Length: 397
Image 1 (cartoon, rainbow, N blue to C red):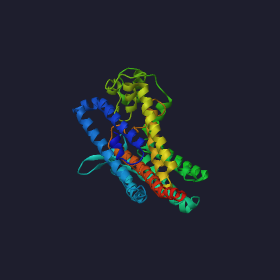
Image 2 (cartoon, rainbow, N blue to C red; image 1 turned 90 degrees about the vertical axis):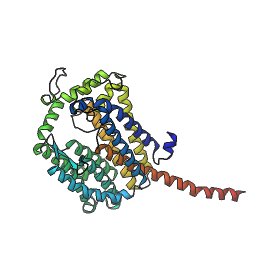
Image 3 (cartoon, one colour; image 1 turned 135 degrees about the vertical axis):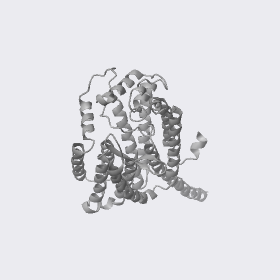
Image 4 (spheres, rainbow, N blue to C red; image 1 turned 135 degrees about the horizontal axis):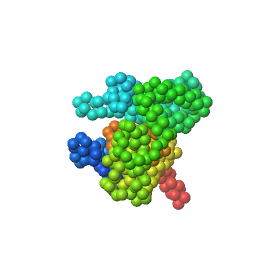
């Protein structure tokens, strides 16, 4: 392990956390896909191999992303935004619809689905980091700084919120954190928050998923008694939340052991949206706390990179991408334990999925690129100081 890590640049603890989460993901997904495999008439090993392939590809993308100097991502962000806006519009009109939500487009030739909001998150955060770092001297100027930045945030929010409100809300929260770090005035942020709030109400009121939003919000505040009756989840608005709580409650302190989950056969999406509940059922409260600690440790390492970065762009990148991953993880966990309404947000690097894992890996690679640059600058400074120290010693003699 030490030999492998010596070849990797950037924060070694982030690499270790990613490897641990990836290994845990393989165990949890393999344990959770039994019912899905049975319904589709496929073997669980097929899903395990597919998930392993995605994780392996994600690690490759993460390695390649961290080898590229993070300063190049400033130019890449403009290209990503130019691609993202039309792609989000295309998804809303021609995307694959599931439960009245058009979130995916099918990639020709390979016939694989692609969730465009994953690209939009990466594009908007890198674009905001670029804009905030380059507009620091005129950050209070409404026309030159505020309107271009807020225009991008509001546009991406509306395009994502129309089919995926939870992701849009979390992305807007990350954007606000970046704006606070970037010294945008509280008054301007309040105005934007008010505008986005009104847009959110509009989406909830007239959007294609308004019935789903109202049902989930109502179900969260009007909790029903947990029962063991075999009620189809289509007829019980608290079906997923209730069975998630059962999984957590029966897991106890030490859990039932890997592969021994019972609720994986009941929950509609135990391998993605509610994988945290399955982890607690199998690994206990201790396993859940360890997983939570890993995400908090990841955020701590990102904050450390922010404080050490000599350039504003690198600091904004590490902060925005780090907050995005951590907030998404906390949101998924909160839903599983009943602290929030059902959202359908996957657990980063752990839930089964394609584009989510790949873009999360790229985001981590960008963070590691910033960390690698910090290490290289530190090493260069040490080399520059060494000859001076030798001259001082010789002169003293």
